[in-house]
Image (cartoon, rainbow, N blue to C red; front, side, top):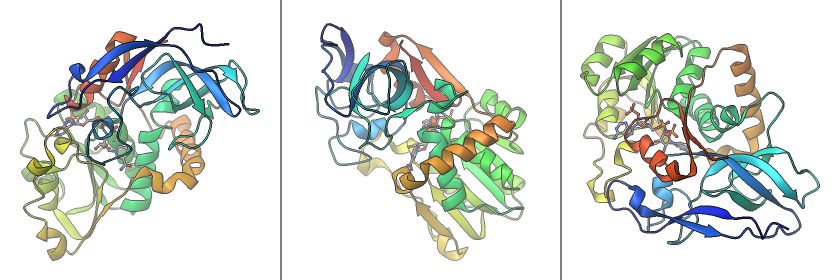
Length: 340
Ligand SMILES: NC(=O)c1ccc[n+]([C@@H]2O[C@H](COP(=O)([O-])OP(=O)(O)OC[C@H]3O[C@@H](n4cnc5c(N)ncnc54)[C@H](OP(=O)(O)O)[C@@H]3O)[C@@H](O)[C@H]2O)c1
């Protein structure tokens, strides 16, 4: 019986216009739904954040299903099984899955982008939600399958000190490439070169990105892995090599502005004149290969070939405010909030 448990939740209370705000969410108290056959009740300990959440609260169909007003904010996270009606899980198992912004989630094991998974031995919640979670897998398939870096290539990654970009850049380095990261701020740039093994970093807040890319990439960029869009994408297109691959992983610079205010790259003809390819992708396309991705990322992380950073905020009251950190560039590596 779980009905007696008090379940604190954060609900979507209004749809954001422009920059998302804590005022778009409201706290609520609910009971916990009793599990049916095949379901689990999970006590949530960690919430993970993705820029795509800005799309999940939009009214128009976008990246993922629209969340209704009054719905519990959707999120991936980690927690502990307290009731299991699934043969593969026991109370006490530590798991990851799509649990939302709440203390307790009654969930189906399968049927979501991230099915509920037990934490493997020696894997912490922080590791499972970062390098082995949505963003690590996105970097794995986006860089290796879509970007197809070859030894000797020059690879540039934007949003490079974030959860996805930091792993994507290191995967290019492991592939034998020269890797340049673009990130906001001196501390993030220092982390990229000193900790994550990038060959160089450009601080887009103070540097002329296009001019720096020209100097750092004298024979052009072979793979550009873009998380940001806008002016940074234009600066990279100015500097692509013949036959380059431009990977559009995301475009966070446009997530908090109206659709009709997002400008396309002024210099997109560079794709024709190089000639190069530009490819978008969604992580879900690769769901049949998630186990492969997790295994290889875990091996590289244990070997020390991949370094990962997490930014862990604390407390249930801070759950909505922690989302804003992504859009203000306050996170280094994966943004999490611990609530349990
Ligand atoms: N295609 C897919 O299936 C898929 C899956 C997951 C994620 N993604 C995309 O991958 C990208 C990174 O996601 P993440 O979860 O790893 O987030 P993240 O990079 O850990 O955090 C977001 C970072 O974006 C940067 N940023 C925010 N606003 C910006 C702006 N206006 N201009 C330039 N940079 C800005 C900030 O870094 P700075 O301090 O450097 O500005 C911030 O730290 C996002 O675009 C996301 O949508 C795509």
